[in-house]
Structures are given as C-alpha cells and as structure tokens.
Length: 302
Image (spheres, helix red, strand yellow):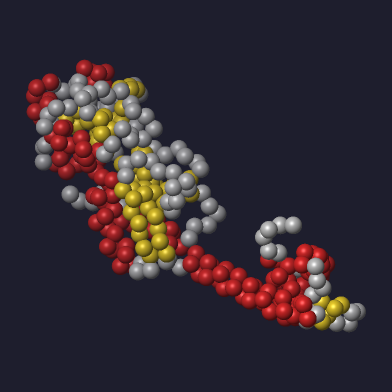
C-alpha cells in the first residue's frame, strides 16, 4: 500500500457525500460513474471499512463514512483553495524572482532600473545574484538570468534584449610603447589580458569583410573573473583586452582607450533574458521580461 494518502479517493468521497449520489458526483467532476465507484471501492479496501450503504435507489453514508467524509471535505476544500491561490499567483505579477546577472552589467545597467521596476510592480520582490559565473538555473534555483553571449542552448528559453558588440582595445600609452597590431595574428606577440568567464571559448575569434577568419588565444600577465578588474591594468598601458561595448564605450569616448583592428570584427553576441523551458511562465517572469526588453533595448547613456 502506498504511504501517501489516497487523495483522489478522499476527494471523490467528499463529492459523493455532497451530491448524495455517485451519478451526481460523476456529472459534477465530468467523470464516469464507473471511475467514481472504483475510487470509492479502492478507498474502502485501503481503509478496511465501508463508507456507503448502497441500494438501487440511494446512497447513504455509514457512521464510519460520515466521520471520514467530514474530514475529506476539509481536505478537498484546502486543495481547491491551494489551486485557486496558485492560479492567482501565476496570473498576477507577484512573488519573488531570483535573477542571476553578470556583475558588471548588473551594476551598470540593471541596478539603475530596479527602482522603476519595484515601483511598477510593488507585489514583486527581486533577489539579484551578481556574478560573472554561468549559473545552473534549475539546479541552483534561479527563476531567470541575464546572459551576454552568442547563445546556442536550446534547453532554455531565451529572449534577445539587444545586440552586444565587443572590441579589442588598448590605452594610447600601450600603443606608443608597443605599437598597434595590424592583424589578429600579430596579437600573439602582444600582452593580452584574459577574462576567465568569456562565453564558450577562451579564444578571440575574428572575421574580416573579405571573408577571412582568425582566432587568437590571449596570453598575458593577468586573467580575471570580472571584466571591470581588467580596467586598471588596461588603462595603465600594460596590456590589450577584449571588452564588451557597455564597458568600453565610456573610455573610448574620452580617448582613454583606442580600438585596435577596426577592420576585423569579433563574433557577435547579444544580451538575453533566460528562463528554464516551460509551457507557461508565471506572470511575474513575463512582467520582468517585458520590463527589461523596454528598458534595455538601447545602451544606457554614459
């Protein structure tokens, strides 16, 4: 015998007692009379007692059945209330969202728009997990994540929020001292700074308008797990680095960094809102997805 209670049998017992007939309970629940009858018989066999006295004209609860039916009715009511609450929760934007975001992007572009989101959705609580490491959404209990990548993972649902360019840059002082590489192959002779959590590969992959392709694995004195940690060394003229546009643009505008190899393009990517695959998503997740799509479609001004 299963250690779990026979919830179906108890629910049908409560319904038959309420309707005072097997046929009435079957009609109410859109089941066959045979299905209801089998469930009641199974419950009686499990509990070792008869819950109904059956005649050709009517059904009456036994004393044993009456006591059980009272409790079964409470169980059914609690279950119906739980389902109603769950449906309401899934249809209205409320509850807690656990969101994983790359740290630098989260600080620059997500944190500044959080107040507007919380004002718009006062019944949603947001837990922001800021880390450049790629999280396991299901295994680590996240509802959603922001990822900056060229995304191939078909086990997740991905909504593209915007494109994200990447550039190879160096400080003017580095270029003055070591010169500017004229092709990707020349990067092998330079001091290249590394980013440990670069999506999919540690190599820098380039394409040229004429169809040529090149790949370089950066070698240098520094590798980091957060892209902002490269900036002091990069700005001091010690190395060359690959930066996403949201990090590079403020420094390019003021001349603190210069783009190298402008004719060569790094493989493209985007900013994605990621959720586990599911037939339906709770309203709170849809609300966040739409909000981010509206607010992140364009880069924030520096």
